[in-house]
Length: 244
Image 1 (tube, rainbow, N blue to C red):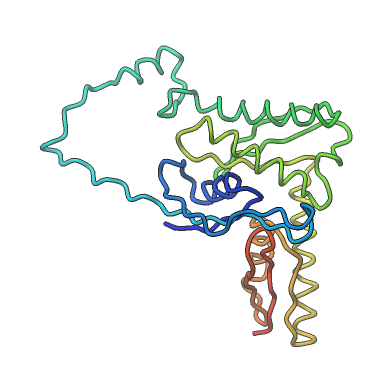
Image 2 (image 1 turned 60 degrees about the vertical axis):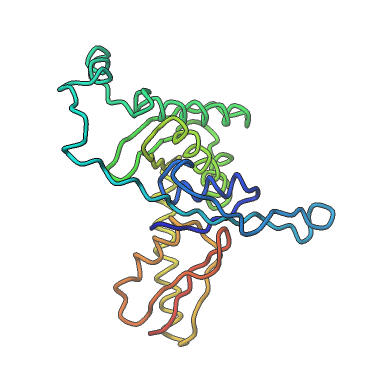
């Protein structure tokens, strides 16, 4: 993927969303503003977000072996890593764990501002790192259908990637909400697929995050009688279930 179109309430937010989708930093892309945000009448009616197009900048070809300068067997940065106990570091010189710690601090601070005392455990998985949030009264932090948790996850990813030179993907979870939500969406997919088979009419779901749309697509990808597609633009992109 060398180009994406992203949206947000502001141009900066739309750019950050695009950078997360591409998994790169801002110096690796060119930004084309497609639509300026507008507040609408009285700041409410007809409000419109920003839309930007991000294009990856091609990396320069590596120098040939003949022209490349010889490198010492161990760089000064690697010497510092060994002196620090072998901690893996990004090009910025910050320990990898620092990015996760900054995200954890951010989550704890946001929770405190909401009157909640929480603890956050970092669990490293193959494709992402899960920040498990525990504490009392987490319903407020999760929000309706996980919308508050998703928003906090989006911001935590921005915070973490500001402290890392390689892309980090964080998933926030609280009270095992992600697994419970996955089960709910899979059951919904099964029910709606049955309705499509019965009525031969397509069903359009409510707007969902990319992660939740993926659950629906994955659940029905091997279904013999229905197929799925996504339509619309973020944040109002929806899954459509159609009869084959």
